[in-house]
Amino acid sequence: MIFVAVILFIILLDASLMFYFIHALLLKSRRKYEYFREYGISRGQYSRSMAAAIEETWIKFRINSPFGYLLDGNAYPAPGFQGRGGKKTIIFCHGINWSRWGMVKYIKPFLSSGWNIIIYDNRAHGLSEGKYPSYGYFEKHDLKAIRDYSRSIFPDTEIAGVFGESMGAATVLQYAKIAENLNFIIADCPYSSLVEELEYQLRRYHIPKFYHRFMLYRMRIVTRLMANFDIDTVRPDEDIMETDVPLLLVHGKSDRYVPSSMSIAMYEKRKDQYRTELFLVDKARHVKSVMVSREKYYDRLKEFINSISPDLID
Image (cartoon, rainbow, N blue to C red):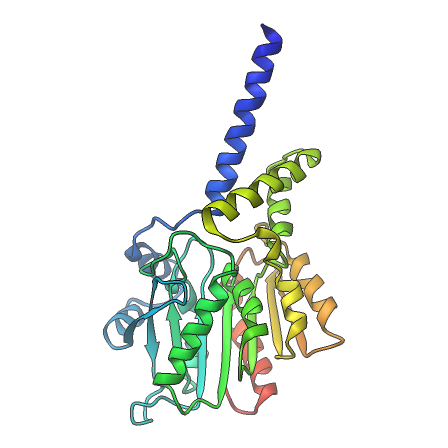
């Protein structure tokens, strides 16, 4: 009886662990759209008047993803250009289980420097459609659709960049290899590969190492069956080696969700071949670098972008 009880306990524990990690991996954000907006206001990331301006005066759009669902977002045309926008465009891409509102904390230097700005919700997040996140596998093609849309409303664009955090950071890194006419990439707290990130999470939860391969094997099967993508193919660290677009990697040194060692490894891998910079922020947790040292963060962005072409940010 004791032996049977132990076996049943092991089976139940295994099933519980698999359910927890698959649920976390393929979680569709269930929080209401208003939650994300109010969170940013309450944390001092942006003002209520800024949020109102985005909702009331920015262009609202819903465009088709190449995979059959709708992507929802807002676009800001730099003023004074007869409705065609200015010559500088940047697209922001948010992280897992969040929404476009998570990217508003980054827009100030671009807003005050005459940039066209686009923020949007990734698939299975916010007001966008889609069943499951795919950690950049499908999102990179959605970002391409957003970029194509930006060309239609901002046809005079000469300088274009993408800026992502967390999953959005990994997405812009994966997008870069299929991008056209892209001038820079900014990635805040990206993971180098989805499998490495999952292994890191297993270690965080003290799952025995001998069990990792078995867990990952089944995660791979389930994600292929449920979400139609292979976790092994989500490799931002490989994708960035297929593009020469200038890249700024940002990471908080106190990040316990995606370790800064991942950005450091990607920087070391790429720096001798393509223009790559690394900005590590002391005492910053996951995607909190801009809140820890806002002016220093903005200055670093300004330095990087103005090195590509002078006076892009005032």
